Amino acid sequence: MDDITKTILERGDLAHLALFLWASGASAVVVFLLRELATANKRFNAFVTEIAHLNKLFRAPRE
Image (tube, rainbow, N blue to C red; front, side, top):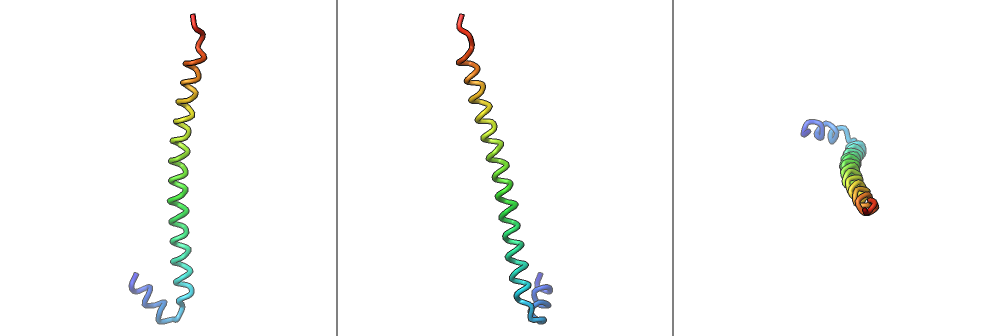
């Protein structure tokens, strides 16, 4: 990474380096948030499934 930074600094292309770092950081945040969202959806689905099971228990005919 040091060689790449040195080459960019020698060429005077700091704007591209800054843009690349910003885009990389933003992409990493998006990937992290999508993983968290998928995990939250799984937990919510499990919760709804358990509520459905409870509803079936309470609605069972009493004899």
